Image (cartoon, rainbow, N blue to C red; front, side, top):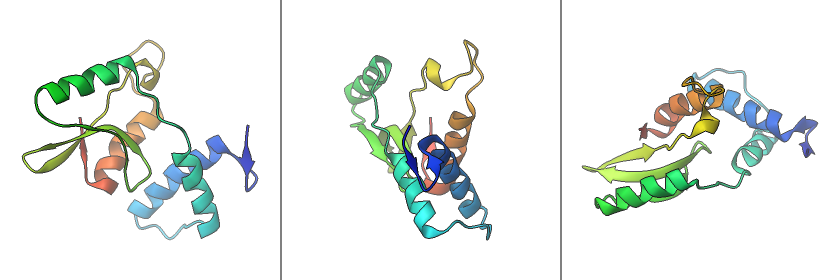
Length: 128
């Protein structure tokens, strides 16, 4: 497990999510810029993986003429599985497989809930 600034990558990842929330809420509980930079680097460092389901969804979007762009890095640092334009509006498509849910249930993981909240409010892109 890699450490930077005394934090493990997982902690930097979560701290960056907290930073986004604080920034959105215009809180003055800011972090030093050097730490924000380390957190952002950890947040975007994970290489995206494309599941078969995601590939199938993207292929179907292409077949109906939507020309999806895959694994888009948003300004917030979040990655969107696919981004399409519909009537001049950007729509993010998230293909949430089993790893996005608690156990074998239908309740999304906390990180999935947070992404679903933060992307529309920070990046201005609706997610479906």
